Length: 344
Image (cartoon, helix red, strand yellow):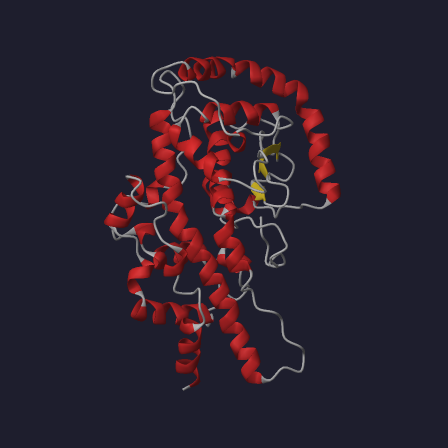
């Protein structure tokens, strides 16, 4: 996961909305920032060895699910056919995660998502057990998804939760381009002798960056919810339900309410999630609050998801709910106007 220390374009392009996923599953007090240092990766390898015997018994419990996958592949609904290499997970992936991934491949919606995720041609995605540190993340550099198989107490996560985590990180991998472009706009720190006006501008630039990334993540969450619902409908009959855990659907129960509005999403995220992008986000005088008022006045349509936008994506008339160009914080106009009003 991205911390507020991990912001340069060359760093791993992964969404801090991973923490949103964790919040749905676990108490917020249990959050841990992900450590991708070599020694931490070594610890994951040791954890995999320690878990090996337990995984064997759990994999046996998944055998019927695998059998369902075979039967589904032979059915008329999901005809057997050669899969492009980018759809296939790396052979060295964690065996339990690979079993869940292959089961998800019985969904046409999941296949479509997997087809959209490419990196350097046809490199298959790698699936790694993230039990150590409860790591749920996507690492662009190695094209790797980390998903914990067990909880902190050593018990296996439920099948629907593991599949939900895989789907969420596939979703993040698909959106890596938008987030990477946003990361390139992270403002540089100023020297100690910077002028007061420069310091004031920096506060606006940091807030603008945080709002830009949060807007991207907000605009993509509903896409994940829609894919999740379709996958649960498409997976083989006889499989346990829910086949994929519902993570965020309760935030989209009434149009023009809940997370259909960016301001509501931001209010839910600001005090614990947005601060990973801008440490001032939970301050009463946060510049982002002033910028939101300007954006609501000037670009209100970009801050709400309409029924048509939702249905166009659901019916596959559009490949995304919101285009990156609709992001009101993508340019400098909102923060500059807000700064000018503040100065007056």
